[in-house]
Image (cartoon, rainbow over all chains, first blue to last red):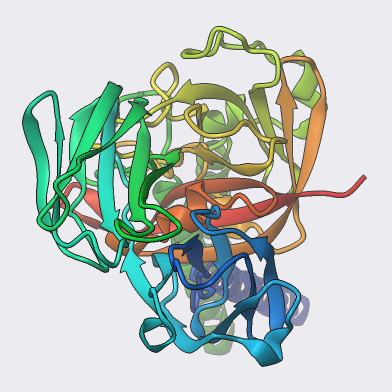
Length: 284
Length: 207
């Protein structure tokens, strides 16, 4: 009799132990599926040299040289930079950071995409203009945006084939994005202060975003020109989830949730059995 | 005494039956992983012909992640009509989708592969266990030439879909990256999507 009681007691201990292990395992499983925080995303910045006053230059960010021999009218690709404030300094090529003619601190936000333009035709007007870019694009289309960075061009409009695409774009500002069918266009730029139109041929490929920069001087050197830069249009994030309340589409598939429920049920059953056996042993 | 024995026997039978049922359920729950087999089966899997590009030479056909037992066929996907990255169409729950308007894995830039988290009803799909990856885990991609490229996880992040850093995910040209993306968070019935997206950033491993 005593041996049976000992056996039953040990069995109850085993059931209780297994039950608690099951509960702990489930807790660990669900605990491991949660993320506490997301890593901070970098910002993305491209730089445009649109200052007729500053010749070929070196660009420093936070004291380190980012670009060497950066020529007027050049547009860089996007580069990742940590979010937060950054000191940007521009100096004539080879003169060193101590001879910077533009020195500004720019605050950039995580995940945001920027175009930073060095502008100004004289020492008193040198500055950095910051634009937030959006390269999201619908499938099969192209997108265009115009940046007016010519100091004496005034407000401009852009047309193609006699149709006005964009208008009222003032100095140091950018147009809205215009979605347009892919194709090759001759873009004309008309100015409120300049009677001569500027033209540029642009192949607006499908799934690309084209930027048109007006840089230079109408009356002076370097002379005004239209510079284009094209990047791939980007998609939005996919929807890869499914309705958890929908009926299954595949009858062969068993839900993980049922499995976890069963483990939970078994754990509770084992614990209950252990308690029951202990009471049974105690009664005898 | 007889009653005691009977009770113990009944209890034992119940426990055994319940354990058997649990075992059966656990076995069938592995069905979704039939196409998400372990690394050993990597070379024996069939290849679904990719959709999209005419020259498939450098493009990916299979994704292997040993740490979470993924071995999946890669379909080639573009954008949906609303501009979002499309998802695999041929085998939506087992395959993954490479964004074929971006660079292929192994070329400079950000290659992106997506996959479903779950199926209707909440059952696991190919990227169910993507959340279990850790920084440093290996991600392999086999391309149409049979070459296997190895990437290492560098960062894992969760974003609300409207705030996802698109340029960071799709447009980082500063290196050779492969980013994996799936859904996470809670289901929002009115929006027919989950609250978050999980992005696993990886970088080409130095040989």
